[in-house]
Amino acid sequence: MQSTVPTLRVALLPRAGILTDAVLVAGGAGLIAASAQVSFGHPVPITGQTFAVLLVGAALGTVRGGAAGLLYLLLGLVTPVYAGHGEGLDVIKGASGGYLVSYPIVTALTGFLAELGWDRRVSSAIGAMLTGNVVIYLFGLPWLAAVLHTNLEKTLELGLYKFIPGDVFKLYLAALALPGAWRLVRRLR
Image (cartoon, rainbow, N blue to C red):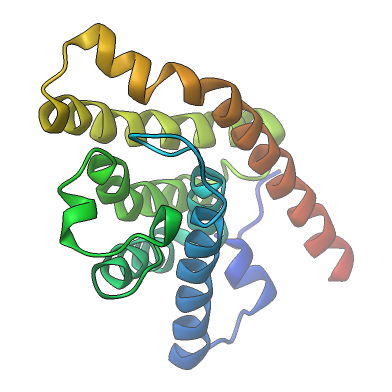
């Protein structure tokens, strides 16, 4: 049975005002930034960002989640929060720019799916997280190909294949965490 409460944020802080929401959005952007700092690989680094992006979106909902993703993207233009302490427009114009540009959309999308109740059960949470991951690749792969002037095979080698094992792990981790958080919220009530 689906809760009438649309997101974990609303379930935990039902009477929160704009200041609380601003703190949560900043915290979500901070979580995405922190998850970017453990990174390795080139030209697109492997990081924990997909996990953070999916989780932040689902926990905060469409508007707040999307705002957290956008805040992270904008912060990176002026401060070193991108992977490997990168910053600036050159990072956006680089090989990983498409992945980064997708984050506001993906956080909003997973937030929307969570508002529809997709974060309540592991099976549907997997669907929400997988949907978010696919959208990240829909932005990231063409961008990577355009920036590096690579063919499809090379693009998939550089921007997809090496990410699949980690992304599957991260999406399952997020898909398990969300229903678990909802069970905890129900117990606290």
